Amino acid sequence: MESSFCSAERLSLIEQSLTVRYTDWIREALDDVQESFLITDPCISGHPIVFASSGFLKMSGFSKEEVLGRNARIFQGPETDRRSISEIREAIRAEKALQIELLNHRKDGTPFWILFHLNPVFGEDDGRVIHFVAVQVPISRKSRVSGSGFHCTLGENCSSTREIVFGSCRREVCLDSAGDLGRAQAFDSFVDSDNRVLEAEESCEASDLEKQKAASASSNILSALSHYSKLTGKVVCGKRCSSVGIVPLGSSLIISLGRIKQSFVLTDPHLPDMPIVYASDAFLNLTGYARHEVLGRNCRFLQGTGTDVEPLCQIREAIQINRACTVRILNYRKDRSSFWNLLHISPVRNASGKIAFYVGVQIDESSKNDGQGLSPEMRQLGAVGAVKVAVRSLSVGVGSSKS
Image (cartoon, rainbow, N blue to C red):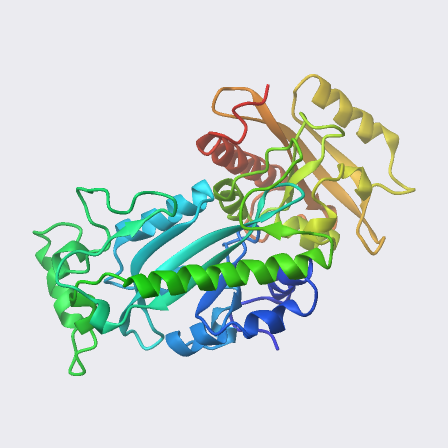
């Protein structure tokens, strides 16, 4: 049954997120894990939730249909510390593990404190992040203390002194500034007769037992993912373990690219046969291919018996002289149905000015009118511009080493 938050195409991508890498038994194995956790996919536009445990649904009050396909920001609220959210975003950008106390909200709006334990899941073949696992352990009242909470990136010395304690859950820390009376009044208006804001006013610190519980649950989930991925030959692991000399796109860049709704692919001209290293959701919908069937392949798989040689020569010449070009070419979907592709390709330079990728933006000629009065050319140039901004702003460690 289609969720009210997801289109049929998006639900298909969410379903494939688990079925591509793991056997059909993975969902049953994950359902056996009692702890509260989510699995998200940074490769799908919007970085949505693709699995929610029964423990999480019970704890949050949401149904599975209300959660799948949505970004985890839906659990944030007025009292959620923005600096803690920034720490989570930074961990995702850096593709590293994180443990932090966080104020979340249930479906009915009541706040509650959790120990949030984040782990990236890497593909063994190419080293790119496949999923993020987010374990959420409720912090019991008896483990809360009068004072400041803390957070730490796993592997760091968590006892180090910090000028700002992000885990603090006192009221004044929830405000952007101590003098923001307007927001203080808004905070006070949130308090109702059932005292549901009580948890937000208390200081908290997870106990050692809760920290161990979060780490253990995360380890068990990663073990299950690894086991059921080995059965398909598409192994995942909790640390980047690729032996292939290919630097994968960072999760932060993938998330930024996912916000661009146009059909496009990124190819890497510095790798043999110039393979696709990113494919947008719209491209997958246009061509009928799954993401794993596209990544690592040259774009020629879209060609067929009716494809003319002339536009292919124009594309090759443009790439040789590092120029953009636009062609009209007959391409084929996975089901072998054909479509006239208005294709625009352009080099994409990183922050140092060197070409890092080529972007190819596709428009099906039969549906070239977008209903917003924009010509196909303007839509393509807009997509290319957005890709260039994403790459340049996030090119540290992504394309800066490429010449």
